[in-house]
Length: 223
Ligand code: AMP
Image (tube, rainbow, N blue to C red; front, side, top):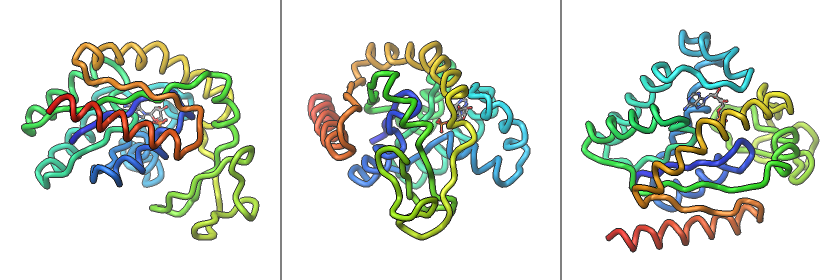
C-alpha cells in the first residue's frame, strides 16, 4: 500500500507516519527529512534549499521531484509500500507523484489528513525539540512532553535541538503556504475517493487508533 499524509506544521505528521509505517510495513518518505539531511551534508541540493527552508517557503518542485522520483523507483523495485510525508505540497507535485508511481506500476491507495485548529500549533511548533543523533527518533515538547533531563534525549542521551524553522514567524509563513497551496490538494484526493480526515487534537495513541481504523475501513471498502 502507498499512502500520503497531510497536515499543517505541528499536526504530528512525523510521529503518526512512524506508527503507520510500522503497522502497514511501509517505508516513510519525508521530503522535509531528506532536505534537512541534504543541508547537513552540504550537498548541491542542500545549499539551494537551506535559505528557502529557513524562510518557510517551498523548495522548487524540480529539485524536490528529482529526489522523490529516485526514491520511488528504488523502493517500488524492492516491493516496498511508501508513506509520503510532506509530499506532495501543491498540485504540480501531486501530478508528478502520480506519474512517477505509474511509471513504477503502482498508485496512491489512501490519503489521510490530520486536522487541528491553528491556535494549537504555536506551542507545538515553538516547544518542539528533536534528538541530534542521526537515526534517533527522540522527539519532545518543552510544554507537553519534556525530556527527563533538560536538553538531553531520553532514548539515547544525545543533545536535543530546535529546528531552524520552528519559530513563530516561520510557522506563520509555513501555515500560509499550507493553506494556500497544500490544503486545496485535499480536493484532488477527495475526488478520487481516497481521502480520510482525522482530528489531531487528542493523545498520540488516540490519533493513531483513529488513523488506523479509518485507513483499514477505506481499504476494506476499496477491495
Ligand atoms: P517539513 O519537515 O515537511 O515541515 O518540511 C520542512 C521544509 O522543507 C518546508 O517548509 C519546505 O521549505 C521544505 N519542503 C519539504 N517538503 C517539500 C516539498 N514537497 N516541496 C517543497 N518544499 C518542501
